[in-house]
Image 1 (cartoon, rainbow, N blue to C red):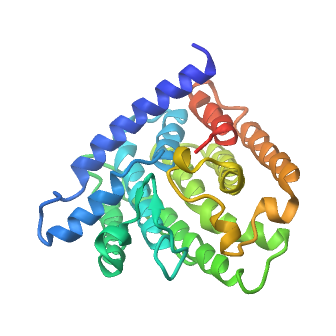
Image 2 (cartoon, rainbow, N blue to C red):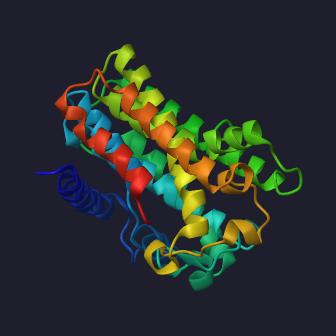
Image 3 (spheres, rainbow, N blue to C red):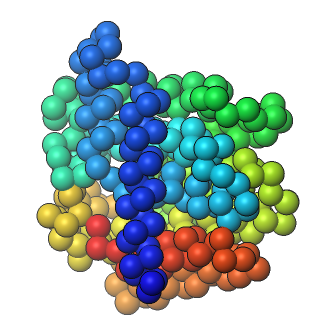
Length: 299
């Protein structure tokens, strides 16, 4: 099987089992208050690549773990990611009308219910991390995972990065400032995904450190690719608005470096990610092909 066929089959298989697990973990759509649950289901099951949970599972397997032990954590990461998208799309944030090819949550359910849907998903993620279904985890590993994800999602990570991104609309950042924003806004949760996958597999500190480096470079590559697609991408393929960064006056990698230099920086991060896990065995093949996919993706 060539790498493209392997990746396609792997992503489809992992997306399927993650979708099934999310259906198990989320409260029923018709639970009370029904409109809130309908809004959370609408956003979670609107599609999406499921990259963060897939990276968690792939890192877990690369360290010798089995899927069952990592699935609750993987799904919790997707709930947090979806909450961030709901809030990011709001009129007071990026004011987007389209997400994953569908009207954004606030366009369908109103601003207030969209805010609550995001709040609910963030909270449900930590319920899931605390209970982790029937998987028995040592308390120290469970706490380490919760701390890792909470830090990545909070002020020191994603939320702090979103705040810096908003502030950067008034005071344009230089390259170092732009990287600082995206190391938090995009990178932190991706690093947490691979690190927690490794922690759940009782991996060595050496492997956790290597995967953290992989996650950093993948996170930066993902953001650069997003910036490039916002300029060159197809609205129908992407399922969201294009050229929105330019309309909002945001500093991006292409606007700061130029398109050619941005693409070069993307390739450098992908190569560095590959180098970070060069000492892993064949079980890390999914991580290697995902790195290449991030650079070549069209949506």
